[in-house]
Amino acid sequence: MNKDQTNVYGTVMILEPWEADMLGSLPAVGMIPGAWLGGWMGTRMGRRHSLMILQVPVVLGWILIALAYNPAMILVGRVLQGINSGASGIIANSYIVEVSDTAYRGTFASLPGIFIGAGNIAPLALGFALRWFEIPYIGIALSFVAAALLFFLPESPTFLILSGKEEEARKVLARLRGPSVDVETELETVHRMNENKSKESLGSILHSRVWRSLAVIGILMLFQNFCGFEVVATFTTRIFIESGVAIDDKVAALLVIVAMMVGFIISTIFIDKFGRRSLLVTSTCLIALFSFLMGTYSYLENDNSVEQVSVSLLESNITAVENIGNSDYTVDGNSTTNVPAGDSGWWWVPVACLMGITISGSLGIGPVAWILSAEYFPTSVRPKCMAITSTMVSVWNFSALQLYSPLLRALTAAGLFWFYGGVSLVGAIFCLTCVAETKNKAIG
Image (tube, rainbow, N blue to C red; front, side):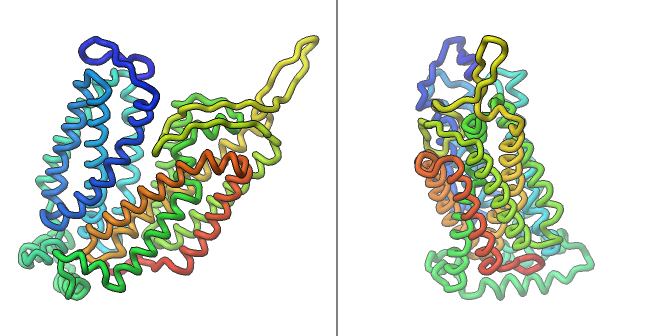
């Protein structure tokens, strides 16, 4: 849209800066009511049917974007996509952990991260060949494919058990686990772990085991957002520019997405071998290492520049960056040439550090925190609890991103990354001492 704002009708549609910002932020806003909608639908309608129904808002969102003749239609479409994302994320994560065999549950639960990364790369690639209002038709086609494939999937066996359809659940488990597995043991485990918990009552969330688990997941999500991983993933281009590294915005976006995919792939390979807690501790320690290195680089660069930045809610693009500061000078004959502070022989350090933070976060605290948010709760309250944790994540994410510029001004770039490093170390201690390992454990 930055290159060509002509819509499908051939007229030019001008977006104000705040409207362009909201293209990125509104899906995250829609995810908050979407999460609660997903919690309700997952409990009342089941996982499979809910995911099929939720293709409706995303298709409507794509249609509004494709046929938009004013910015308002695009913004409404983005809200609808956010509602779908929030609801589908809750239900899909629940479904994956419920149908997976215990020994491979972590691997299957990590796979969506890889496909999300591929999905993020796809629009960038399609943008080279298609105009902005043509890309939604690809999204519409994929939604119909998803609905068709969901039709052939079995319902979650644990949901069927709690719905009183034990015989159907027994058949689904036998089909999923194979003839050599005793499904009666799994049926008994689900009954035992969900006894005396009514799926209709929000009061079940007040059970001591449940609210303690909510507290652990909430604190874990707090570290996920304030360790610097989410900030770096969102503001990659800005941080590159503020570090004095000249890089194209599309290249920066591709770098961070590819780095995330690498981390997700590593997580998928090792999560069931080493466990959730080991990946969390390794991830936060590596983030701390790269953050301290990035802070030290910024400190040694001695950049006293004054940054004036405008940060929007959950913004993922640069809105305004003004760097006025000291420059290095090189003399070539009688002329003096300005060289940006970051254009030294060490320009690769911030690139390596930011990519290191991204890979480290995506191999551990990024995806694993979400996996645990599903594994920590029994089936009877899982969708509701995941809706609560999703809401907490939205609050933490909003706070972390909105505090980026104030903290940058108060602490300088060096101090900010040292702060992230310190938070990561505290997070590593928390994961080591307070997070229970769920590898190879029944979750009910």
